[in-house]
Length: 270
Image (tube, rainbow, N blue to C red; front, side, top):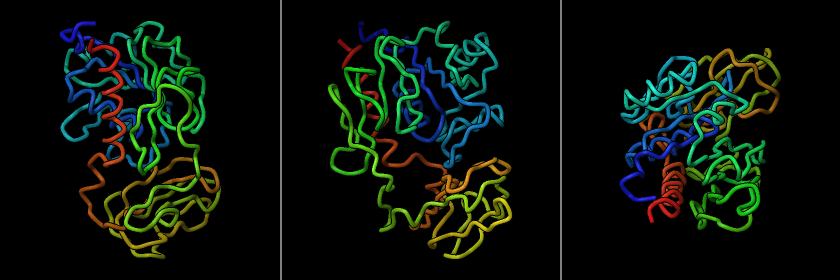
């Protein structure tokens, strides 16, 4: 495909959480703007300050100057593109792909397993992180584990297996995560961007208190009134304590999203 047509590519993204949103943001900033994102009716994103899935609830969401809007159907998608914005569709079964026929599909659900993505769904299918095998169910996989291989494009085989241990930020890994102490509905006492001390109560779930494990700023917290399961990840505390990080795309997400652009360029910029 000639370079002049790169901006005509149709990009489908499964998911609209923080990693998916970073991918959409960087593609948009690279002037590849016919982007639609597919989400579930009640998104479970934690880093809501940088997640386009918030458009499902609010009708729109802006991240670092780029706006996404909720699309209620196929006609809305084109109208949103005409407004130079990203479209977010509630479509857990990805049915809209049959009509939009994306040139590139990115599975950015980060489920640690393949939930049904196939190479036949687009000319270029990219999977983020564990659960995919390049050359088998997708064409390329992007390494998502922090460290030496973060952002590597894998064209044959699998990425590093999921360890269950989050990346180190400020000297903390598991300690910075917030997990539901019980099954129930999350009732938030604090909000994203609030500073907390270790032991401070952030929310109540099923009659039990969810407390911060470390000092820092609440960088992520699942949407209040969301029903959650016991031990489910519902938030995270950033020990660096910089509130601006709550509304800006992370270094990890930027790296992975940049690799998606490279993958697209490898195939289409020839």
